Length: 321
Length: 236
Image (cartoon, rainbow over all chains, first blue to last red; front, top):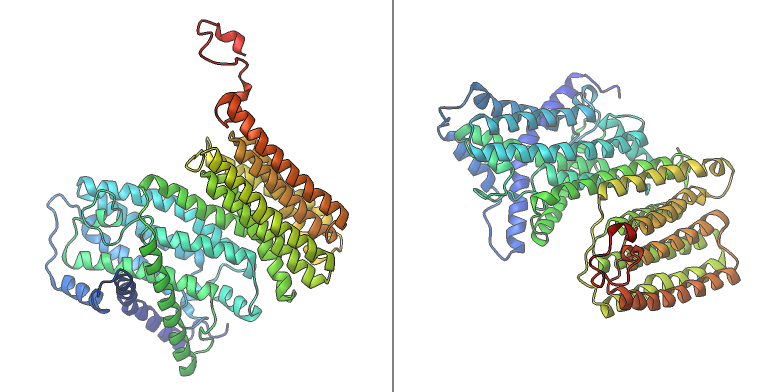
């Protein structure tokens, strides 16, 4: 803990945040590739997502003449908030200064900030699709947030801290322990992650101009670098949730010092874990069909129930065990 | 907070017990009869698994026998009989949704908290590591009762009844290391006979009111079509 707020710590924190930016399109490319292979297609190359972003960034940004300044500002706010949220999740090493100044509740708050501005931008131009997408996004957000907070509280109660670094540290010190509460919290968090990052049972990330779209509907009016930033922040969000699940529930391999060996091991471990999670996501998306929108509350109620059971089973089974 | 000090097998018991509780919730909120029967079968299998692991950690040999009995009866025979009944009554595609699923689920959560509160004095006593499971098993019993209250379909009510029995069995295993073998055998045959009787009842109910919705048994009139100009007050 004495590593907090030192210069190498900050350098590493900045490096890790940049790594989030760099790895996010790779994860999306990997999921797309795995999905394509499962559907007997060759699929786009692994690095296609980078090229898409590069193409969009180079293009001119057109803005509807009814748009307010909020519409122009929203991509930057959404991108920054998502990026800052990602920076608080330990990717390679624990005990970074970013983890010391922001805990899990700040992370949920930053994601909520990004969601609010995304919804506002969707409604800003006044097109019908944007409003519909915004209302659906807020429906899902309002139901997913309590479930996520419950899951997070389950972790926090086990580690007696809402700080992600301490949670992971606590888990590493304890070694391999089968906790019923962690099992339920993992289930709840996976469902929330699927809903929040717009993956298949809730929203189809590959649709465009379909009546049931949620995330795409809010981005219809965007183009050029604005669109690139919005897409990029969606990719960062997916990576954020993937890292959260991988590093909190399966923390083995994450670096615990600032040495080169620890960093290399941490990077290799997190890449392996994310590749496995991405493959699981691809299989899930291939097996499942998209739900009707009116069934999304049921899906998220299940997530809430799982998180609640996690909390209860922590109190009932683990406190006086 | 010393769960990490328990041996891995004992942690496994706690995890399995927690999944039994989760399956109770699944059973409660499941709309399709066939899926509910499957959930019930899994619950029975998990109860048997809990019993086996408790037997292995405590070296209680007669528990192996009751685990095998539970597995045969609750996870295979009764689900198979229910399955056959449902097929015979042509209810495979029958779905029945609760009036307000969220309210029912939240009531069930409240029941879990209530049973924990009820069991707290018992947890203070120095019992074996399974003492925490008593709260879970009481919650399973209460949720089974809740299912019998809220479901109107006869087969679903029987599932609630059977899952109550699962909870009782779990309580016996976790609190006292299982009942004497004679008692267990007796209970097992009781459950089996109850199942056969339920099957006969299903067919009878079905023949008399042409449906398995037991709410219709509350109506006094034999057939609704015979006396159309009868005043509504009399029906109550």
